[in-house]
Length: 234
Image 1 (cartoon, rainbow, N blue to C red):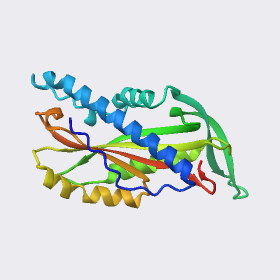
Image 2 (image 1 turned 90 degrees about the vertical axis):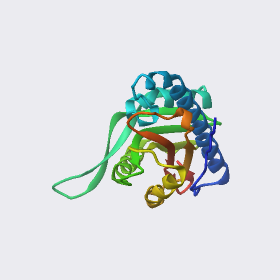
Image 3 (image 1 turned 180 degrees about the vertical axis):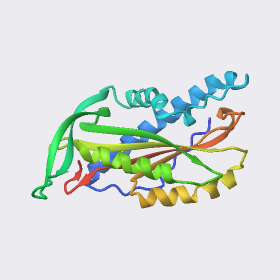
């Protein structure tokens, strides 16, 4: 199995210890997620031979949850999904025009404790066509994740990080060689840099693990960003 993980962007704010912990957590999670995806695709290949297309990387967000949970569980045993959390919602009063913050209860997709740091994780999935090269959905998903993580009210205690993860599956409706895929990724990388994503991990999916019907999938990205405050990761 070819598992190529490349960090395209690495500009985490905060002190070196928190940067290292966040980077290590993201790298270990990405490795386990890619391995889990590869095993699923490999096990599903017999159904593709019968004419079905069930590639995990192109599945919806809800279909990805079980593999995200499995990857977090292999990264740390201390984790939970759909955890209750307070949400900060800005509200402008009509009469006085004063902007105040109100709170309501909500849920965060995943919680994990890794090396004495608590991670509150929001997750979304998107697709990128190597033919059309449109990044609008990716931009919207990143903006949504940034808003969600900003609303998570976690207090000011140390050792807490708010993380957003976006899975991007790269596909094409006709076969493309790897060199043409590389050229098609330029708009995606520009958009990622514009959106202030901190870490990007890439998986070049083995051809034996790709679908033979409808679409050819060659590449997958996991994009990570963290809420950064005056004292570093918060």
